[in-house]
Image 1 (spheres, rainbow, N blue to C red):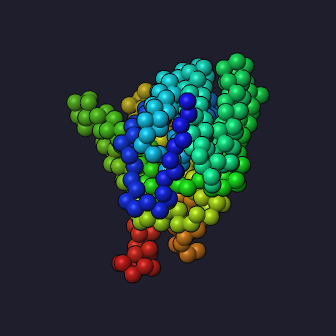
Image 2 (image 1 turned 90 degrees about the vertical axis):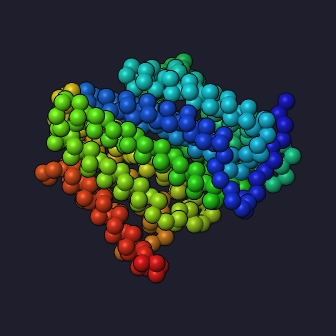
Image 3 (image 1 turned 135 degrees about the horizontal axis):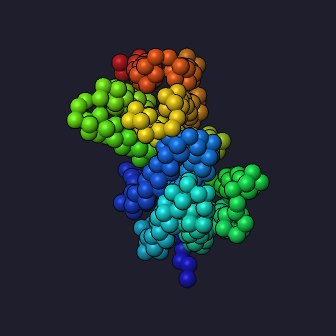
Length: 383
């Protein structure tokens, strides 16, 4: 029997992430790591197009399920036994999805990925139906979510498990499914926007960003190990590790420079912020994979030239910077200050074609972080 969930106060003081939400994040990081590893190996083996497409499809499923749960929990996590049990079902689905990511990345086998995803999404149907009960203000919104998510899972089962083949037509149908998924919140929230908590959502997105930045830290540690494991220090790998660290720290700095995320509850800006983060998150994980590809090239284990390694770092860093402009800077900064990240993104994209490409990229991102911080400090009088 589905019991009613209590609505949280969107103005609740001192709202923070719960241990249960962090538990869900832990499952998400396993899946993200599997997708990043598959991207790294695919690029290193010169399967560029397949690796990139597979990564994007897998990452979307991981992120989308996490995002939907997170927004729901912000509004309806009442710490009840029912909410915890549904979350455990959701978490179990995340583990099934994570178990299937490698097989999907290598052999394009979707059974486990779709099965895990459907388990996660059916848990959300349960939760939305529970939120709809005894809810006088948001019942229609909750029922729209439940029906939209439920019907979409039938689509995924049909194309993802019953009819799936790695063909252009099926990939197009897969992308159509993504568009349907994205459309559900637009349709549901038109009934009445759910009562999510602004500061809580800012924290939750920041925590997932830390998870994807963790993929970069892991790659840096591998570079350090490779630099010293041969009995002598490898100067190129040391430079790579140092430059990768500067890039990672600077990207963290740019994201967490100040609390200027999501300053408006305007629906259009909320959707841009909520959806636009997929570029930041995917780019963060892909940058870590790019670092790993560069390690493979320097240790002579890759089958691609150095330029591919440099591009595999510079392109996701460019997307990360552009993503930050998309979700934040374009709305809240003056024209001159808002231009800092787009300019840095364009210059970053040129760095693979100059000597000491990774070092040059590190310099660009570091300068962007310093300039942005100093200009904003001067603008608000804190400098």
